[in-house]
Image (cartoon, rainbow, N blue to C red; front, top):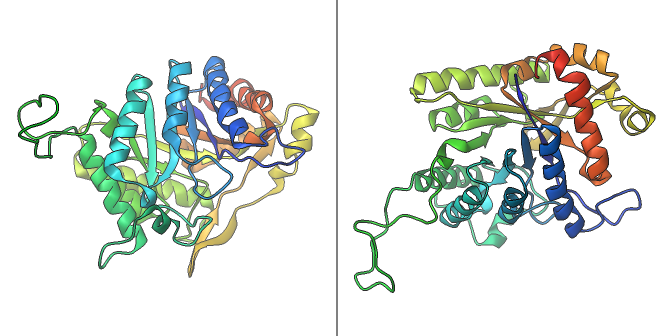
Length: 340
């Protein structure tokens, strides 16, 4: 068995082929998509977070809205760029969203990747401390976020407060019990996957990572996951970790599928660059008739190593088509691979 969710980048544009012409379209359709995904038996609804772009940004209003409309599906992010965040305010937002969804939040966070704006986090009022770079700042904020999620008091109460205080130091409210164990780290390297394990976070591994061995993408990603699991065991945490990978997978079951994605199956891994002087490897997309798709996916080592698979979706094609696409995976592909 494997948990299967969708991952939406939340694009919109005033394009004649898009079903999402405005931010309102994307937000409202994201809610409808999560509701419909729960109805067909999908396990998770996850959303990317990007700033200064015609894409989904502030996640907590959306996650809270989905929480009120659904009852079972996991609701999460992949990922929140911590360079842009106030960790304490984020604890309050995340706590509220988790309580609204009755404990279904699964938050993916990361130190961040290249964005639309040069050093965009500076516009949000943040800059690295002395001796830090922006990646260090993102990881420092992540650790502070994790620490405050524990719900341990740290703030000195006012001796003459507006309302009576409980005894001792005060914590942030609302506190969401158990949310600390539902935080995931988006790792692009083996080293940061190990760091995530040491700090008790689940692992999100995307369709790209730094090229550290020259091997095919799925093998490098599987190696990363194994290193993470070894580090988790060595750290002595008292629970089993979770690991997700994301993939673009399209089962071609009708002419519309073939028109949209028939060319995707001919793609291969690609080498690119997301940081100056450091190559990254980008995983291929999968698109084929279900029988062939099952054979191809069975050879993906990283999917075998993960307990959760996030299917990246073309959100601009609208709710109905995306539910058709996700249903095709559940009906025609997942059983043949033992995922269901």
